[in-house]
Image (cartoon, rainbow, N blue to C red; front, top):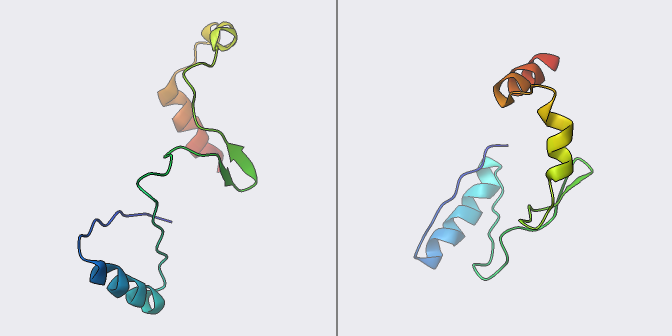
Length: 82
């Protein structure tokens, strides 16, 4: 589902959006500004863990460097599978 971000200053705007969401079948999600942005997410049963700069990827370099993989080609092939 496509998402948009609406920034507002007046609290009446949120009440209006909540009322409109009942009639136009859209969902409203909001996050706390103090809340940590990156959290684990579960999408279709798969857990996505936020990236961490302390991860050692040297073993992955050995695996993928000899296969001549290109991100553009991988994306093109992924779209052709379905």
